[in-house]
Length: 229
Image (cartoon, rainbow, N blue to C red; front, top):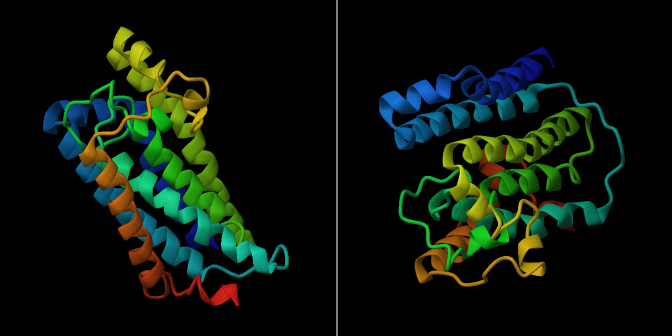
């Protein structure tokens, strides 16, 4: 349990320290934002791998008995989560985290019209859905912590982007929402997509979903389909 808590603490600090101390600003000014995001992602993936490995080695403390329906939750919701993840990474998004530096077209917001934080919602959905088929203490700490961290991160990113973009942020943010689909329901957002963004999000996300489903037993030692019965 000690290694798991240490790994979790290091992972969370690695996400808090850069923005809280100004380190992010210094690094982006030196190496550029895109290179910073790439370096940040590599470090995050390495720390996440350590955290998951430590979680597997931690003592198993059951908290509730699993029901059959709980295994279906991640199977169903990880498909939209995968689409949010791929779209969040590779579709232009001036309002949140994105690797794309292509220009953003407000008339064709696509995924950004659904939510301005698709990548963070992908992590929130991933972690929340994995609470259900893992009814033990370490899983609740791990996935519950990730869920809260992802949701809190949306407000932090909003604050940073608002400061950086000023009036432009207010104009763009008015056409979308943090809560998925809320801006569409309120008729503040467009449902128009560019062809490239639609293919990237839907096809890329679906491909990632099935790859993760197939490799899950190898990467994480658990076959998610086996629990369906």
